[in-house]
Image (tube, rainbow, N blue to C red; front, side, top):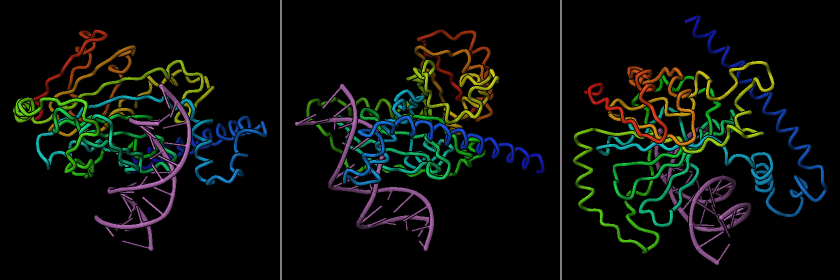
Length: 305
DNA sequence: AAAATTTGACCGCA
DNA sequence: TGCGGTCAAATTTT
């Protein structure tokens, strides 16, 4: 118990350091952003809604590079209505902040951000979209690293933690009428697969430009900028997987696929992860066989029986 | 009462 | 100009 307390205290100090660093960077940036009178936060005075002006300034100035935030997609398949909640629960708590009909998509896209954004400034967001072709499949687009304290506790999240998925499931509509995709037979097929596999998760790391980013978004989550700590590289952070991927994967999950592009798989795969059944997977073996642009499904059906 | 969701409006970008 | 992402007031849920 005492050790846990210590760990938490250390974590807390880390968070505070992080917050301090973040604030400093924000200040520095604000100062340089508003140096010209025609620019920056003076726009607040131009009669537009103030809050919006501020946030816009923030997003266009300070977080201009947010596009290069780490971004990855996981596709989660679930087999029953009740399983949806559990399987989509990735261990973090999210707050829905929007929903949008997407052109050509049957189902609307849900926009979520970390519940602790306001309190802890956690920038993690995700987009959840039900697949057109296979309604049992959800594509979840993660963006940004969790810097909130829940990130360090997420592993302990109870499997029964509930996440509501309000994606307008009753609204079966298509925004445009360009394509008529033959779906019915396919759906039957996939559902058969679903029944046999239970559920499925696919993780796809998509955007890793941030490696070369001179003003990386990660600086917000890394308290040791400019220090001699060589472990500062995000790829070698021990909690990489923990922070960037769903820390909790439903026991019903049967398959994990990693897609890679220009991405150092080695470092990620070899990164120790303290989560889920995937601890059981022989990562070294995985590594030995790993090849870029190749997909290696790991069937863990046995683990879930 | 507080927290979470819904939903139409707004905004930037291509 | 239309689309995707975000905001925030209104509404619902806890």
